[in-house]
Length: 438
Image 1: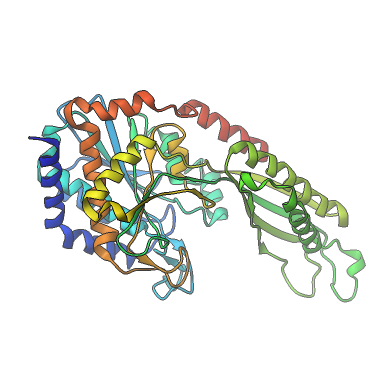
Image 2 (image 1 turned 90 degrees about the horizontal axis):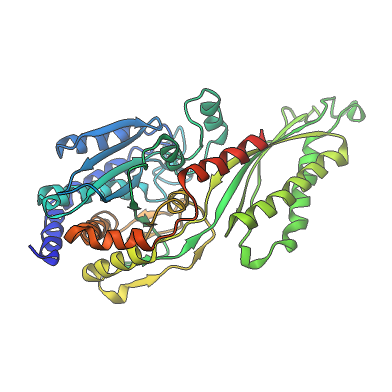
């Protein structure tokens, strides 16, 4: 069977399952769960793996799963991934009333299309024609939210890193994987469009605690040390630094106060801030991080408060593999037309897919079918076929490209790829930074 014939069969099989794939995505949409809590979504993925006759491992990084399909040989392995978690947006009409969780970032589409890819390859017995294996990964906790909750899990030794793919790296889930792919819905691509390539910012997370002295705010404020004032001065110091950040480094610092005090008539003695320091490169991020810490410390010094700064490993900048991107682009051109494809530029946001692409070749293309803003109340999937089904075809066809005919193209990708670091170097880098922040 020729490669194109195999691709056509796989796509036809995915089309036959289109209703089921869409239903899965919509079911996940209706039951949004936050990171490391995605038990219902994980159960649904487990059911689909079982229905396909796939052996799997579950409870990876608490809620993650992995299933494998074997090819004619196993010396090359491609991972197809999807993310289990939702984001928080209380004002979204479909947000969970208790948690504020909602799939306003398209992770429900990722999981559905990942399963759709598995269906297409399984239903056609395509793996008998391919010289390599495919791992299907359902990964928890991409959205970097509920930091205090995750740090509690960390204290309980349930996790070490706060992101799901980081935990997968630490746990060795990627140790036998050579390259990986996943899709991401984008509200900046109206209609049946897709985008490949591009990069993204990485970031360091930060939890800040200002410690003052409580006193009666009306009767004896002079007896207190106002931790809120210290925090405000620290934030103003960050604002004063912005002109020192190079435009080319794409630095973003966006702190929020998560606790401003206890009672209005008590001088605030416990004030908390969370923030990210984002940038194009780790060098730029670390430089900005030093400046931000200096500003935060100056705020405490100005009023006589104390400050505790905890550094939290964030995500690394995303690096899309150029060859894999071209394969995916060509396949999507067959599905939606070349005129509907474009190349990505630099994205100021961040993803833990960046961590994976720093240790192996991978792609993170963007798919249309969405309207509204990401993480916002108006986010909506308006073209379900484009959001759920088309990406499954694109990824399945790319798997065929990589593993067909002795996996020649996949091996070429591995030969040419030059990941910036090994897994050991990756873990050492983050663990050293985190230990310094404690």
